[in-house]
Image (cartoon, rainbow, N blue to C red; front, side, top):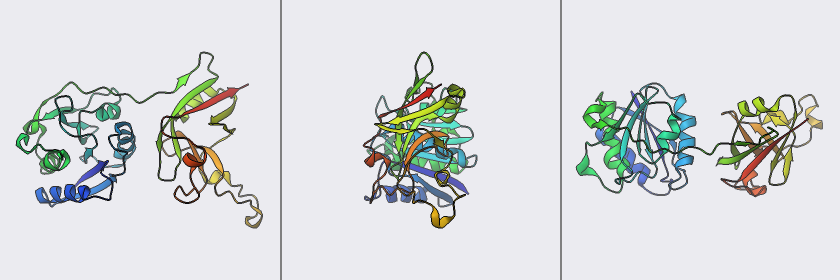
Length: 278
């Protein structure tokens, strides 16, 4: 059974997600729909790219991904289908696909010309769903449209390293459901620059001198349980599951006590610095 995933900025309050799923099942009942996320901030292509980039690699070959973010057609925002690493991505030419590929040429890239008469202001339903079902039935991309080679170039913000390699200045690129702050500074970059030196991370006045490899690493399990200090809500820096530097609160609850984003007063786009000291 073919898997079709959905990544959108529709939210869950309105009927849009249900309508999109209904359109898919009306075209092709024998598919399995997986929701990756419908909570992308409206029109935020960098956030959408981060989500899909970290999700698609867990899916099997042949999976079809519908990306309904900033998808309304225009002469500068064409509708595309990309075959990349044996998976299909249906998306507008808004920069998301260039972030996903990171200068790697896709196996195929096609501008959607089929279903022209169905274009409206809900393209995920009227166009993307039909294209996904065509692929799910074994249809080829050449039937959908013509080859395309003008992918809109958008690049994620990259960390800045100073001349003497003592400071990395990074950016918060995502805030998750727990209020944890994910940066664009990778574990590989830190290890490459560190060279045995001590490390100091600064996040708006809060300083961290250690990077953990897991959330539970903040707890000293060698101390008897009854003698351990409560760590809930304690600030920490760690490498997350995508090997990116993350600023978090241990067992934080964004909607009650607060998370790292609210308690540290940090948001998407704010800077984080990593200093190396001899």
